[in-house]
Length: 178
Ligand code: PNS
Image 1: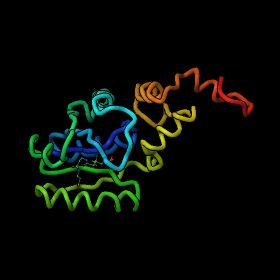
Image 2: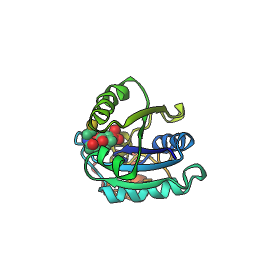
Image 3: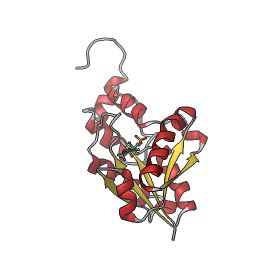
Image 4: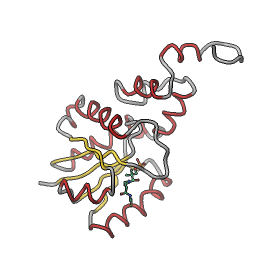
């Protein structure tokens, strides 16, 4: 049985992430999403909340319904070893992603021998990044079509804006938000 881990910050999971997990599941018999910390990124949601959203998202898609979701609160290679994964699957949107991913792929292989497989998500998702989703949410913009169902509400709640805040953000005028 081939086992792969799909790691990421998933803060929050997006439609682009889900597309990568779907593609990973067509390549490997067993796929485990690993929600992990990226020291270069400040988190919005805690790891357990990110994992819960990811779990709901994969469960709702027939292709990824049997994909498991775990928290890797340590080295990714340790998580891979624990679950018996011989491959890591990451998505690439462009050259900047590759530049960031290459050193990690090489380091993970140096540490444990695990191979990294890069997949390209559907071009329809190439503009989606968790950081942009959070920025849009913080500024009252619409994120519902960028993330799986349920995620937008969680992100809005975490940034301290409800649906009504979003509605107010669409008002005209430049004064401070009531
Ligand atoms: O979604 P991201 O932020 O691109 O994912 C990066 C992530 C979380 C997979 C990476 O930072 C990671 O593997 N973190 C776990 C800690 C670890 O193993 N660090 C060494 C990486 S070579």
